[in-house]
Length: 241
Image 1 (cartoon, rainbow, N blue to C red):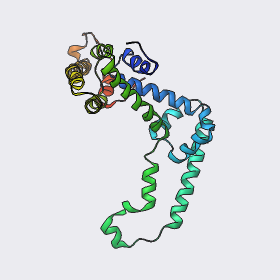
Image 2: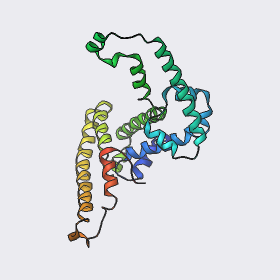
Image 3: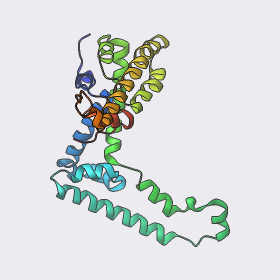
């Protein structure tokens, strides 16, 4: 079946190699989103209304801080902090002294100030933006699995998946595929993942062995970056680059 424009990101992620094609998709979306936020986007009123309310998670603040546009980041941070300050001022002015017995019975989790802080501390404009597109990529993968047999060859020749996205394939595949299509998926990815978990486990072991003088003259093989790849495989996190 001829490649369509919406299948290109999925195909490119598998063609890129690495330990998890879905992490490749996510990382590309993340890079594009960070660049987008520090481009003209931060001056758009509708986007600033959202960032004022949601802010960003620690990881994406850090990613934006690494870029060169400190002014853009500062402008978004300033108006977000203004929004938080106004909301806090309103909640504090409306606060009524709580009875000790009420806190003893129900706990302080019902305090509206704490509830607001929990909410604003757990939202991120970039995370939400990525999630919206990433869900479409997942749907596209399962569409390709059902309609485009060549995706199966890409999966078979891959290095498997990180544990997070391996779990996603199992749970979402059961919802989105027919019984026969799902069993076909399981028959391919279960032994594939098992094989690749063992591969990288052995590579990490060889990495540790190289610090033993008895193995110092042995070749490194593929173990030099095995720690970075092992972290990606188990925790879905790119490190060391």
